Length: 367
Image 1 (tube, rainbow, N blue to C red):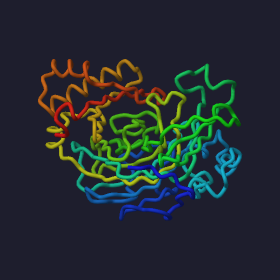
Image 2 (image 1 turned 120 degrees about the vertical axis):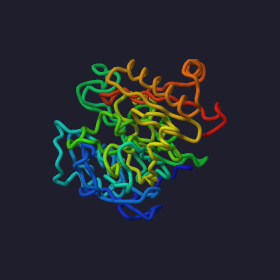
Image 3 (image 1 turned 135 degrees about the horizontal axis):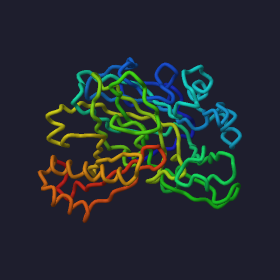
Image 4 (image 1 turned 30 degrees about the vertical axis):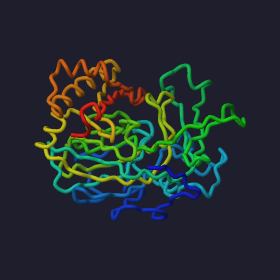
């Protein structure tokens, strides 16, 4: 799917809305800094197989350390006021239940009940169409976080860098960063929009922090989850209570500065339920999220320790190959070592993430 950079912002209810079900991002349909739990009520209920078009909001430009005033923040960086999203301005001004000293930064839209989903099943969230809502994004290095705490950012201040989005002469959507502040020479990189957060509600009555990912999905930040990809998550509460957020235009594996190119998306997703019996045949006993793209099976591993995250990902890959293809564990271990890349999803979200890319073509295609 070709990414289209809009010349005017996709405001609430305006512009292309692909699905019959549409969920805007406003104080009544979003959580800021926390993720849904069993005590939350759905803001939308759909049947399995339904597509939903969901407006998502980037947290960049609305946070307290950025002034909690997106008009002032973005116009100071040269963004035309006409390109600002009204729902971002409204959320920043709203009196929402969020403690910036305790809660996370991310905004998620939902939760969405999927009728018939029960614990033991898998919820499949398929990315149908992630549309950029604005022609700009932000990459931040702040709070002494990132891969180089104490070294970056340079100086004491937090750094938030504006990146432009545009369509190149060959029709490819790219992000643009100057090589030096105010300079004319530029670095240009392809945009691959995806949702950093896709998840299901946890089973207890306490909303989890938005930063660390886990069995519920959440902030997994896997950049393979672009159009055509599906994320499978173990359902933990009746109805699943799905949500999405943390929209990105582009991210390198590792996300080393702390954030990706953070920017708001209008994402259409399809929500399907995979029964426990079918899930066991296709994936084995899932302890965490697993994804599938047109080219790869993508098991995951997560832990505060990166070495343990790698080990968990390898174990998940072995179990997946055994369940999907009946592959002997010793031979699967050899195959993974010879043929599969293990990528660092991110190292900045408290719980580190690793994902493997198992080529479907090595096994004759999808099964």
